[in-house]
Image 1 (cartoon, rainbow over the protein chains, first blue to last red):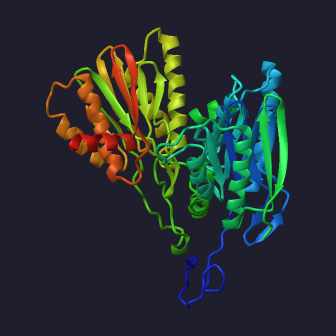
Image 2: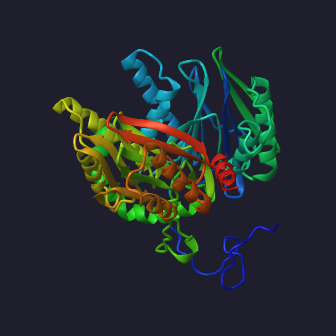
Length: 237
Length: 271
């Protein structure tokens, strides 16, 4: 299983050697990597992300977590283009404050999700290159996960992986949490300890096979008692 | 423009946005789409236009909308059946998407094309329908609702919106079914199937609708079977079949069936 490379006319690899004149264009985006994951339980929610910030073949930072705390009951994970992640979280924080001042209460997870959808769609023709996943508790105290695409389409899930290693993590979650494609298996509800252990295992696997994922794992556990953070080391290569 | 008025707090001047950015944006699209094919496309019930950068900025590959949605009128109202798969390129992003939007208790909208485009504009349509009700003290007709939607997206024609939707409902003239898309089409009809799996669905519904007087049960079975067959043959459709029935009292959610279960059920019936 060798990676397929694109070859130019002179037989050399296009992205690595000089293969002839190429028109360069300024791109306002760049891909900074990173993987985010969120799981909703009966009375808790977990949002986890790796902490590697990369660009091309380089690593900019090994300590750049992608989970941001929004309220006491909501955490957002953003991966993709770091510049847009920073701006987006600033905008969300500002809108949360405005809501708090005009309505005298904190925004609920569902409301934040709906608001984020319209913020993202507002830039429909020059999108925020960010893959968002919101994890938190809903009004009844149950865990809620909302996953987004870059232009604002969203839905509520039980679990979701986003970012560079999402295609590797999602099938494993489908099997272990969703019990998909398994027959004759008892559907046990997910406990908090089991969920945290699963998240750690799943990221260890992702770091093995995805170059943009690694260095450390930041886990935010949201319960009615607040938000607890845990950091676990991952492969640094 | 409608988009600007909803998003006033963003204080973005949308009237210039498309025009000013257009030269930049079209270049941007090619470069961005190149990135998207690596990092995962924006979520779509479609394969949005992607291009291979190596062949120069003008090469665009058009794909069909990856989904199957269908709706047909019959004696007792309208049946609406949809699949629930959302793809980002060739990655299945979700198998549990709600492609039927409940605009109000007697109007439904289906989604095909760009997920964000469909859900945003139909949510805006719900708001406009509510405003109409408050102003005129009566429910909006299906024809008027579909016209509102068609006019809203027509302002953005050519700017890259991707939306193929069916507006289904019951008003004082009886059952209503309109197909509206982002190209500006708005057609009234008795049967529509939209998406990459539409041809397979048409085959089933056309043969089943020959008998003129279907009962509600038979019509639901027909709709379910049509979507199931489409998911069987179309790689970009799958997940669950969501079935709705629109009648004089409004709409009812009939069933949500996993395609795997339906497969086993139909296999058993064959034997």
